[in-house]
Image 1 (cartoon, helix red, strand yellow):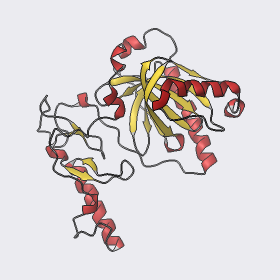
Image 2: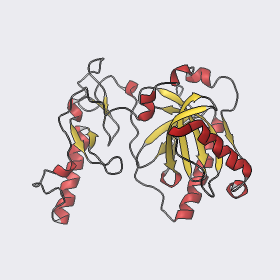
Image 3: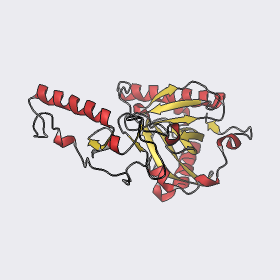
Length: 283
């Protein structure tokens, strides 16, 4: 399929249409040898609630964004290199069907399709593209993945101290290492997680102790590290440890800050109730 579509006019037109829908806010997507293999709407489980997102599968990248006007305007473009992707099918429940997890070193999240058939199509096409990319680049499959964030609604109390109850005044926060929903008191520390960000990120108290212990062991084995601190004080890995509940660093991502457009979509059940296929794969 990739070889057949590469360098064809129809493929160039499809990619140009995607670029046009993202407009100036999106990155150029046309590259020699790049092929658009499929597209469709999937439900992405975000921090606050599940939201419809447009997804585009290319032979080397996976692109998704927020829907402003279907097939006319998208924003919040995210580009994921496929050689970094690992998929994990998730079990069916009465409340959640046709789900799987997309895992990468920087971000992991859950999506679901309109039907079992579409779910299987997405998984099989992505896995085949990943296989081809790894073969072409000679890279081994990715083994380190970011923890998916547990949705806010999954718990009313801090998942570390199990004492603090969340409310309109007591905010939820997320540990960047384990993805747990925690209170401000249980996530006062910062630690540098280079795969996720060049600056220290919020982590829960348990993950901080584990990460700090691991860092001390590495420094002792290596005869001291670049932090220059005393044993047990990995200062190079610390940020502003004092952080109140008003900090704004816990947004799920830029797509949750955008807001516009999502409110126009009906609920998930209504959204997928028309019986039409929400995904299309090119051949």
